[in-house]
Length: 604
Image (cartoon, rainbow, N blue to C red; front, side):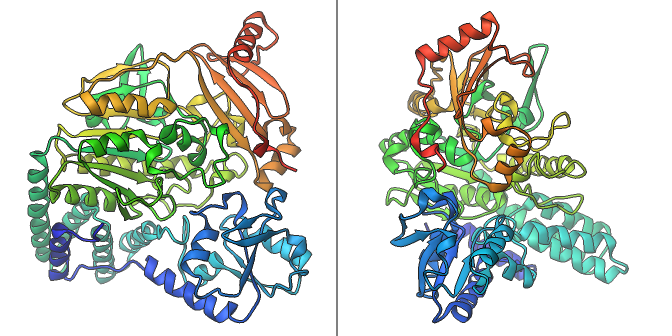
C-alpha cells in the first residue's frame, strides 16, 4: 500500500506551512539506526547468540525481527538460547536452539538480549553459566539514549510518553515562553499522529492564553478542518464499505452494563445505540495469540500450539476475506509490525502503523480515494492493553506488563491510568465516527478481556478462569444503519465470528448459532515469575493448562493436573463439584465434550 494518499500530502503541506511539524524522538528510523550501529560495533567478528525468543519462536517475535531485519549486521549470529527444554535441539530460522548451559560449549562471545521483561533474569543466568560472556541488552541501550520503549522496540509506541512530557512542561513551566513552546510541541505531536481531537483542544487553549502567533495556529486549524470536512463529505456518499475494528482487550464490562434488564452504555455510546449488540460473547482464550485462532480460523486454543507460528493465519483461513473478494472489495489491513494477523498476501494491502489515530486517519483517507468498496481490518494493540499507555494521561504512566497483574501491587495508580486510556479511546473513536458513512458496516470486537485490577482479589490472570468478565467476556457489536439495532443476549462463542459475519456481509442478516456451552482454554504458564508465584501460594494446579466450559448457569473446569471444579455463575466463590447439580453438569461436559489436553502443553 502506498504510504501516502493525496489527503496525507495536503495535511502535511498545511502543517509544514505553519511550521508545526514534529519529529518524535523515538521514531522507528532512529531506533533502527541505533540498533544497526550497536550490532555493527558490538557484535562484529564475535560469535553471537540471541536470547529472548522463548515460546514466541515465530515470525513476529523479537528474534524473528532481529534475524530478518538486521541480518547484515549480525552475520556472526550462530544460535538462539532458550530456557525452555521443549525447544532444545530444534531450529528457528535455520539457527539451532541451545540451552543456557551450552553457552560456553559453543564459544559464544556476546549475547543479544531481546526480551523486554525478562532481561534481568537472563543476565543472572548469564553470570551463572557464562560469567565472562558479554551481553547487549537492546532495551537497556535504548534507555541509555533516553528512548523508553513501552511495547516492542519495533513498534515505535513511545510518542504517547513524549506527549505526556510536553504536557508536564506546559503545566509546570515557570515562565510564559517555556509554557507556550511546550504547548506548541504538544500540538505538533498530536498532529503528527493525526489526533485532531486533542490538537484542536490545545490549539484553542493556546489561543485562549494569547500566546505568540496564536492566530497562525487558528488559521492552521481552520485549513485542517476544511480538509477533514472534505474527507467526511466524500465518505458520506459511500455505502458498501466494511470496517472491522479489532480493539485488543476491550472488555465488555467497560463498554456496557445491564441494570434491571436495560442496557446502559459506558463508552462508544453513539455507536452502540444503533448497533446489533452481542452481550454474551466470549473468547476462546484469555490472551491474544490463543484467542485469535478461534476468531480467525474457527479453532479452539488447544487444537494447535499458538506459539509455533499458528497465531498468524493464511488468507484462506479467514472466511470473510473470501466474501470480500467475491464482492470485489479492496482489502486493506492496518496493523502493527508486531502482529500482522494475516500472512503477507497479494490480495491484501497492508499499512503498518502504531497509533490509533494514525490508523483511523489512514482508513478514512484511503477509503475516500478508493474507486471500489473497501474492506478494512484495523488492529489497535496498544491503548487498552498493558502497559496501558495513551495520548492523554493525568499522571505519569507507570509501565508494567500483563504478567505483573496480581503479582506487583499496582493499586495506587492502575485504575486511574486505565481510566485515562478508556476516555482517550472513547474520545478518539467518537471523533472519527463522523468520518464514515452511517451505512458503512462497522464491526467492533475484542479478542479477550483482562484483569487490570481487582479490589477484592489481587491474583494473576490464570486464577480468573471462573470470572469470565475479567477473562473472556468480550465486546462485539455491529454498527450500521442497514443492520437492525438490537440486543442479542444469547450465549455466543467468538469461534463462530466468521459464521455470523458471513450472513451479515452477504445479506445483512444476523443469525446466532444455537450455543449451549462455550469453551475457553488456558495455556500453561511459562513465565518463571508466575510459576514461582503459583508454587509459593499453592496454585500449582492452575499453571499447566485449564479447560473451561460455560453454560448459561454453570462453569466446569478441569486443569492440566486433573483437578475438576464446578461453579454456579452467580457464585464464583464456592466449588459445587460435590453437589448434585455440580456432578450432573460435570458429567454432561465429560460426556459431550473433549476435555483432553494437548501434548504441547507439557513442560518437561
